[in-house]
Length: 310
Image (tube, rainbow, N blue to C red; front, side):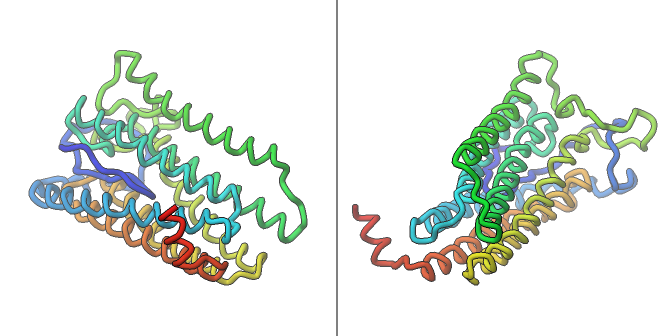
């Protein structure tokens, strides 16, 4: 497997491992669905190639979105802009994790749980920051309660500290000398005891990694709702467009979880391409929503050209 290009909002899934069965964490999929794992090598390879191109292309609209959202004319909540910028830590932090999974074990990041979980936790941190950013901004507009500058600094410091701990959680496994391809993230805390649940393939996600995946989905959904509320709070309907722009990215996350639910089976490798496509579409719709917001706030194409030439 070649290293995976990773971009917002979720990491590339990659083809499945063909590892033996093990007793593992509680999931919703039945073991007999492992029949899906037979064959599909060519399809998986094609999906892998297509996804790589789509994920790579999706980074450009994300950077454009950040430019328009962070422009002074927009006046976006600082917690929101910081959170969406912090997502780049997830993107570029996931790249070495994916390279490590391929170089050390010859698998995709999705099949190396201890690397997968630590990388995904950066996404959960990002989404939490965005939620808190919108919440604080709404409190300012609706209740006149302004968060002190120290609170904003604390939010940034907390995100940075948690991001560092996420990285250390993977470094600690590697430094222990006992890392294997399917070592569970955070020791698999919360996994069902062996024998309590039917056997799963060894690349099944651990409970901590499932928690991170599902919490990221919920956090992003909450952020979408808060963006809609913020539109009413500041009397700027273009913020509702931001909510709609975020929707395809939520779909991308659902596709990722569906793929993991079926143990990254090659027979459904089209999920890899679909997730990449929805990421690219979502980054583009979010960028367009922020462009509309910037234009409604006074930004002009001439101003953008002048800034680029400066």
